[in-house]
View (cartoon, rainbow, N blue to C red):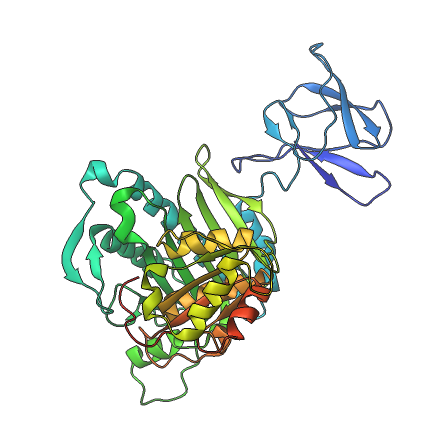
Length: 417
């Protein structure tokens, strides 16, 4: 059962809703106190209006009255309150219509397929030790990182999902040397880091998947071959993204998404297999009290960044509070905490296309900021697929204060951090 506002003379009504997409039997409307209603296949219930909504007075089998049916309450094992059980699929069908560049159903299908792929990745990660998938491969990816076995598995899962969904023309992955062309008739290009933080996977530290979605560019030059089309699709500036998100694989699996109309978080309900809306319209605090960076590299930082970190951890910055350091060495996990609690997460050498742009879109849609220390990340036109740059993500007042120190971009010794 779900309580919703109907805006008619009947101020509220109760609707029978399935949690597993089975047919909805009947809608219940109550116009007068004490009216009895029969729900097909359910107990006979008696409802009464009250200031808080509705109250079940009795069931036909003589059971005691249930508590007031406020949003989020439970009666007969069903969830009351649409916010309590809004699935990702339902959310997408309602929200993609507001994306001006998108074809409604196509984008919803694409994002549903990405979400399904992240569920598969979460399952693989949970059993990786048992299945012998821990540890490194012998291979090295395009950016010089040693590939973990799970990097390759996660990459294959996402590639297969995107190649088979029928909506995608171009794919660019951190784990691939070149852009991939999947369907010349596809409308979208997807860029992704299939498994961020994989170096820590053997220690069961949180990891994540990051992705961004562009509308493909029209083909204007007959001289361009198909791979050049695909590359141009993926090298658009971040402000051209129509969707961005990440999955966080931790104590819970979360799917955080923006379609350009706020940032929203979904938690995987393992009982049903659904991503369920748990964090609507995430808003990052204007200022936090946490900084996230590997400060073992302090002596390699530029002087401006050193001065900024020195000031905030002594409580001598614009805020009188002393900042605390929190660093997991998993970008998705560090950014997720920053998104919820505020502060700043930083790294001197992240990839613009796969990490900087999607996370900056998510941050901006949550009233935060993504910066390279001088410029807005989303305004930067990528010049190559695996381009790296400094990345600072977080609360607007924290990022503005950091930028005021000017010399914060590390340009030397940007090794693994």
